[in-house]
Figure 1 (cartoon, rainbow, N blue to C red):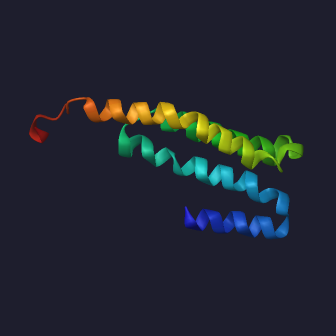
Figure 2: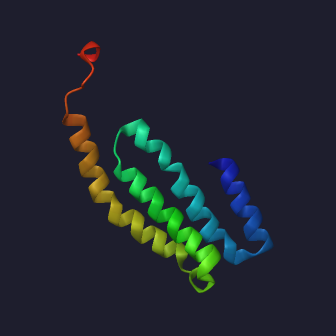
Length: 101
């Protein structure tokens, strides 16, 4: 993640409007590791949406580059409650591994 953000900073230095979409792609991609770490597939949806918004802003709709950070923030806020509820449900489920009991 830190190396990816260095890439976003470098892009932002070359062209300031590229920083937010590149950051969305990097932050979204880092959520992919949470799927296996926490066992909640909703992180994959969140990752896909953030990467998708960043890619659309970067390649297809350059007009939304300036507000793509706000769009990403809205997505993260909208995902907060389902992710919180999903993590609470995952903690309540008994482990399928008999050795863990």
